[in-house]
Image 1: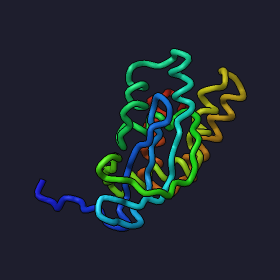
Image 2 (image 1 turned 135 degrees about the vertical axis):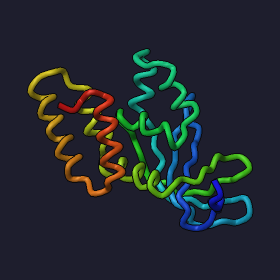
Image 3 (image 1 turned 60 degrees about the vertical axis):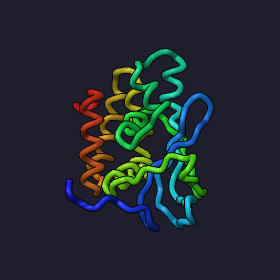
Length: 169
């Protein structure tokens, strides 16, 4: 309430979006330089192709559509339960035209870890398999992956997502 407002400077974690067809991809990374209203960002750009496919198939609700049209640091983790494509991002954002939100360091670390640890692939494997021994094995692999994570915030978030998807047992 009375804390300092975060300042955009080198090393600050940020979140942005980039239009990709009808929906937005999202970017999270670190500020690498500032020149007036131009901000250099180095990080990852994520294309949530799995969620886009679910929408195209009509298998989702309004919330999923909202996530892709208006991604925020708070809702993108819900897009990360399906297959994603990602690549390194190193570009300049214009503060006059591009969204550039400052991310809390814990949220940045969680999003970065989620992608770098390939968690969407593990979760999507469990969700896409029919009930049976293959799905049970995929759950065991996911649980083992969860147990080996060292970031407690990432581990807690993954546990919450898995519990809400009812894939823990």
